[in-house]
Length: 226
Image (cartoon, rainbow, N blue to C red; front, side, top):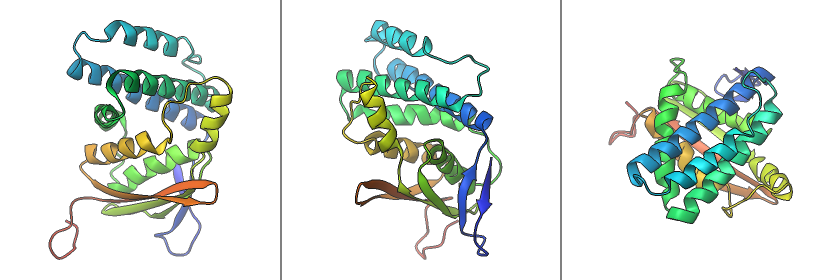
C-alpha cells in the first residue's frame, strides 16, 4: 500500500494505491475486527443472553466466506458487506441503535491489536481511512499526511452506492445511513491508537461525504499539539 503524491506540496496527496491482494487482505481484516468485536461486546454486555442467536448468525457469515487463500477483493467485499449488514441487524434488533457505539469500541480493540503500526502516527491512521475509501472506489483525497496531524476528505462515499446494490440483491439493510455506524467506528479506531479525531459530514447533490482531521493528542491552551 502506498499513497501517491499528486502535488508539489507534499502535504497534499491523492489516492491510496492497493493491489488486489492488499484489498482482499483488508476486507478479511475488517471482517475479523467486526466479528471479534461483536463477540467481545456480547461477552462483556450480555453474558449468556443471545449466545445461540449469535452463533447462528456467525455460521451464516462463515459459510459464505471465499476460500481463505483467495485474493479476489470482490468476493471478500461481498462477504464483508453481508457480515456487516447482518451484524447490524442482529445488534439493533436486540439492543437498539445506541449499542452501535459500544460495538464500535469493542471492534476498535481488535483494530488496535491487528492494524500494523508503520511508525507514521496519524498518517497511518488516516491512511487506513483512505484504504477503506479505496476499497469502495470512493472519491477522496488525503489532504495532509504527517505523524502529528493528518486529514482526509471523502467527497463521494461509494458505500452509499454499494449498499443500494446489496439491498437489491437481498442483503438486509437496517440503518437509514451508513454514516450512523461508520463515524462511530472510525472515531473509536482513532481513539484506540491514542489519537484524537474530529469530523463533519457533507452532502453535495446525491453525493454523501465527510472530512476527518486526526491529531496525535489534544491541543494545549495555546492551540499547539503535543
